[in-house]
Each structure stands twice: as structure tokens, then as C-alpha cells.
Amino acid sequence: MAIEDAIVLAKCLRDCDDVAHALATYERLRRKRVERVVAYSARVGSSKTVGTVGRWLRDLVMPLALKLFASPSAHAWLYGYHIDWSERVISTGSGTRNVMASADSI
Image (tube, rainbow, N blue to C red; front, side, top):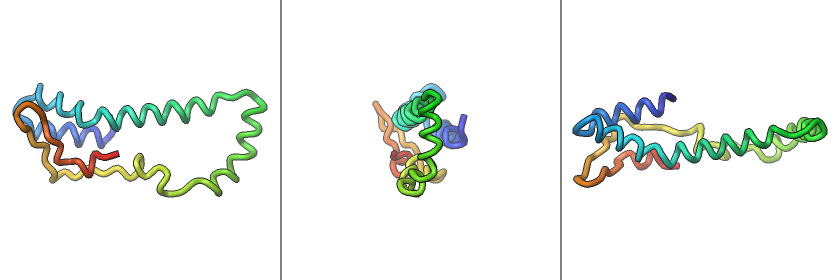
């Protein structure tokens, strides 16, 4: 479990009435981001399964491609992720409203 996951879980346990509701809220709050991270990881992993010629070409072109196309904002959604502990998860009857919207946005 990443530290971000632990923080969100702790916030849900802190702010929800019972453990079952906290766990359901945690899943609801994290699902979209987790699915995006898994899809991104699969995409990156599949690009590394090329043959001998493909590996040689990739290794030759990669330094130039990184200089031209890599930018700090390209992965900001992944590495710049921040969760504010002071923001509360508020239960609203039938559902849960995420007051952590800015922190949990993708």
C-alpha cells in the first residue's frame, strides 16, 4: 500500500461512522485513480516487450526522445499527487461527498 492510499484510508476511517462505510468510501474515492495508474503501468510495460532489433532501436532513440518530449508536467498527475490531511470526507446520507476533490483529482 502506498502512503497516499494509507492516508486516504485513514481519513475515511477518521471521518466515516463505521468501518464498513469507511472501506466502501475508500474504494469509491480511490478507484478512478487506481484504474488510471494500472492502465498507465500496463501501457509502459507493454512497450518494453520488443524483440532484439526493437530493443536496440529503442535504446538508440530513447535519449533523444526524452530530451525532446519529456516535460515535468507530463507525469504531474502521477508524481505531483498530494492529499491534504485536514480536508474531511463527509458522509451525506445515501452516499459520500468527497471534500478531498482537489487532492484526489486526476
